[in-house]
Length: 100
Image (cartoon, rainbow, N blue to C red):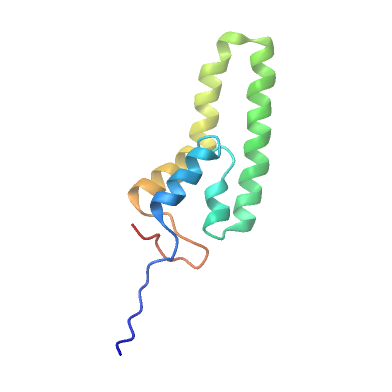
């Protein structure tokens, strides 16, 4: 009986992308919880929620500023993990790359 080992994670890249999309396109950092990065996920969740509330509060007062501010917040909160997931450099809590 062969005993094979792999350095790839047991977490799926496609599932992480789906969770990223469900989490308000990366604002909430839910993909971090999926791969086991709990501390990073909590920080991302808190900062993302504050960012979403700030965008909502500003949209109530200055309607024309909402779209540029939303794009800037997305680029800060959701964009980096999206790029890492697409390029395959997003890792799980032990440093293993996600499987395809």
